[in-house]
Image (tube, rainbow, N blue to C red; front, side, top):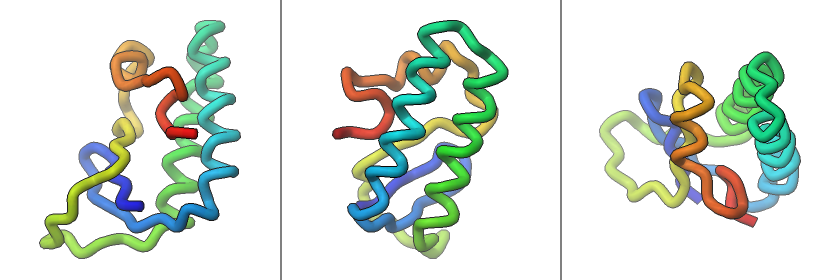
Length: 92
C-alpha cells in the first residue's frame, strides 16, 4: 500500500504492518475523544514514526496514487478529526 504523510512524501508499506498501525490508530482515537492533547501528540508521532520506520520511501519524483493519506506531524486535533473515517485514520 502507498501511504502519504502530508508535507513529507510517500512510502510503500506492507499489509503485514497494519495490525500495529491499527493499534496506534485506536489509541489516537481514544485520546482525541477524551481531549488528551498530550497523548494525541505522542501517539500521532508514534504512528507517523512507525510508518516511516516500517515503510520503504518512494523517490521524490515518483507519482504513485496514495491509498492512504496521514496528517502532518504538526496537525491539530481538529485537522485530524476532519480526516477521520469510521475506522479512524487507518482502515480496518
